[in-house]
Amino acid sequence: QRAIHENWTARDLSLVEKSHIVRKLADFGLDKPAIVREYLPLLGIPAQSAAFEKLLAVSRAAPGIKTMIEVKDMDFAAADLLTDFSPEEQEGLIPWLVPLGRNKQKEFLDDLWDVSRRESRAAGDILGSPEFLRLIASEALSPLQKAEAARVLLRDKKNPRLSSARKSFEAAARALGLPKAVRLEPPASFEDENLRISFDAATPEAFEKTAAALGKISARAEFKDLFKRPV
Image 1 (cartoon, rainbow, N blue to C red):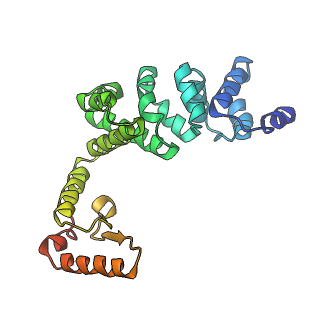
Image 2 (image 1 turned 90 degrees about the vertical axis):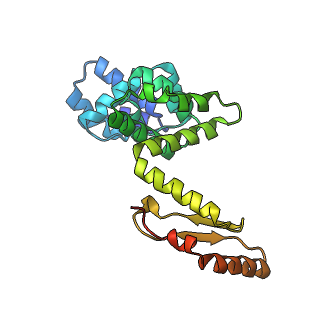
Image 3 (image 1 turned 135 degrees about the horizontal axis):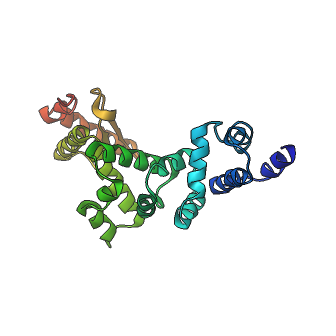
């Protein structure tokens, strides 16, 4: 075990490589409890039976999925979410996940899973719906823009009430005619009345001009309404 440990820790192993190691240990006849107890910790994986099964699932994944996991350097948490989906659904996820960073990949997978259960629909059916197909077919959007737009669609489906509140807030904010330098952000999850207002100014004069404009806007009833929590 010490020799194996020294060999494994000589370099960083990808998640796919770790999954192959676990698969080979199982194929060599080492029983599951021993692999979980003795070898998963050496690989930096939680010593849990479920983690063992997830690694086996990664080892059985299609070549395209393994390539994505390696190229995007997906961690165990993301792969854990990914392998909850069927092999066919995993293939369909590739164009949505590849442009995203690690954290956004997890959010995408988590939201898709929740929406799938909420609507009692397969993930493939959701991603095959017209709104997602239009994104994929768009020639005006980059792969990253398509993936980000899909994230918004999933978030809206996951929490329609929050989506409605956000859209109403954005429309009301646009109607105020704020200076271009001003950024107005709604409360996180609309759970309180706290707004975040910020702006950039290159000179004292620019600062005073923007501050004066905000002062006038703050006196308007429409601005005060933004501080009211959505019902």
